[in-house]
Amino acid sequence: MTAGSPRKTRRRRTSRSGVAPIVASLLLIVITVGAFSLVWGTTTTYLSSQRLGPLQQMRERVVIEEVYFFNNATGSYVGVYFRNSGKVELIGQDISFNGSILANSSPLELSLQPGQAGWINASLAWSPGDRYTVSIISERGSRAESIYLVGQ
Image 1 (cartoon, helix red, strand yellow):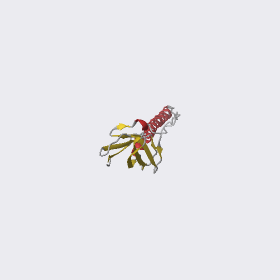
Image 2 (cartoon, helix red, strand yellow):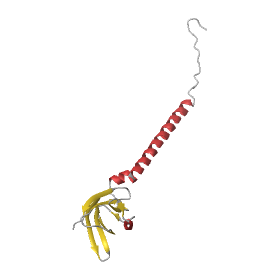
Image 3 (cartoon, one colour):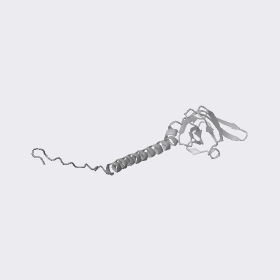
Image 4 (cartoon, helix red, strand yellow):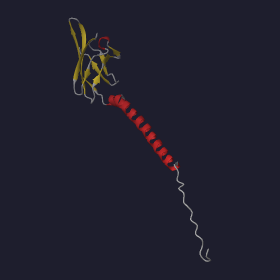
């Protein structure tokens, strides 16, 4: 050794970056993807169920256009002419008069596309001068209701 010159010792640098940061990064990625998948699945399931139920019911519209009370040789009848003015198909209606569903119209094998109209004839013992509340109820629960007074 010479005086005045410091001795240089060389140390070997060893790599201390092990696999722990890589495993931690992969673990965070897996947790993030798993959480996103869970949220995505829950959201799409909820939205699908809403499309099939409540949202379809909100798009459904039934309009009672005419109600006819008539007699013929076999008895007293009522005819109801109604239209689907909604944006979805109208399925399986019941017709009720003063709150009671007519036995010969429940369930009706009738489905109407948007814009189509339908006609229901049912036997009903009615009297002139009486007031009737006519209701049409769809399979999804939509309801159209009108009050009619039978003429003399």
